[in-house]
Image (tube, rainbow, N blue to C red; front, side, top):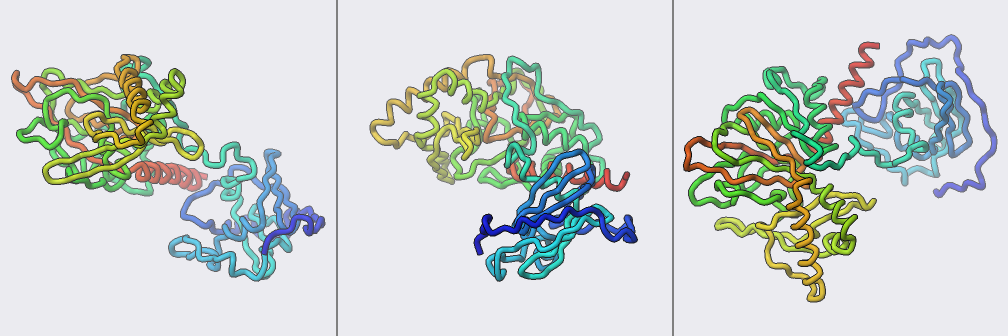
Length: 430
């Protein structure tokens, strides 16, 4: 069933709108998803050969789509389950490679295609086609939000939003929410956002977090309290200073997001410190490329061996994705177990580690701020390093934060839904 470009017919049929009597108010065809796709640029002409559909848009741009891609992404009930919009088509069960027999541009702007060998007629939504124009993509996996690296010395405070009254508003997963959209764009793009003036009732964080997605439970619970307590099972539950770190690098898949919600804070000290771990890693790559390479290769031991649990995982301290871009950092000195690396890697690994530790002490990376009751910080736990100055409980007062974890996927899904809601609103206003 392989396509043979050399055997393609060169017959081209320049097609313009047919069926002049057809009503232009005819509904556009369904799409293979639940999204909304405004038609912001109309199609003015199409032509095709058996394997390629060429589309000319009103703004002069041109798009190309393979016949097999179009067939797999149709929205009819032979391709997707209408109830779930999940694909049911198995291309390998077709008698031959799907090709285009005829194509026409409809009066309502949709494209109708007759496919061989099935002799099946399928229609395609112009807004959906425009949004999925893969032939003209500069980047084939474009980020949901462009990533911005930052230095603490360039900022006086985190990106901060006023959330007064936000929790009193009705919450609907399909509605527009400009505050949450701004917050998620900051978290995904910069790794950090602060919301102010939220409720301070104990446990209210659960409802706040669920406006994004379900919290991820850990051995610390769904929600955890960050306050000094006797017999602590984590340094976080003391009044000690905490060095820059990510949480739970001891897990195979460390939590993607962390939320810290301030309920009380009238102690002396305890200032929060945040730094962009990707900016630190980039500085290491620029200044000490050999050490950077070592920390992307050597697998360190991360261990949380408490009295009632024993979590251990091995991974590099800096992880890159398939494109060589930063994916995560695992930096937490107090959660590292003994290095169990090949003998000849031990000294280079420690040399690289100490160079990184020195960078973490450079003041340009650190953003310092205080928590006020009602503050919530949301940050990417696989990117941002957080720390804390010591606070003095002997002088009275209290410091009580509640925290929880979410996954990056929840933030991305929620932001896509918010963008979808805005597109739907534009359609309804049109």
